[in-house]
Image (cartoon, rainbow, N blue to C red; front, side):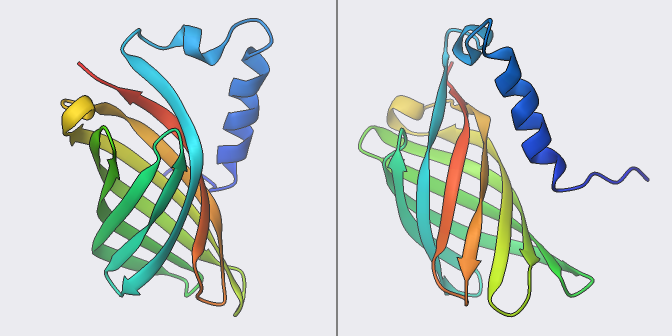
Length: 153
């Protein structure tokens, strides 16, 4: 079995960013795709529900339902979830795989991969993906960065 470190994600970002000096990332995407980025501030309202606000390119609200989870070595919890980002122009539906990595009693790291599976309004037939990363202190709100590509038919 091949193991991939969660810390390989920043290395991949650096690799992609190094290409930007000769060609913009937008130039590498199909015409019907847009690069997006921003911030998500969210809180768990129950063990299986996360709600929050989204700012940046996908400004609106976030609703997430955890459908399953697995605990690994008491330090990592992997969540499997479904999310909806609702904007003024429509909604984006995602299926999510999220790793919460405990760094002790006061801080957790969040690494998420979110596959876009559809949407409504301007996002009808949407596909693509988002990545999220960030911190949660003392069980408080999550402060996440997101980036990715949203494509439409």
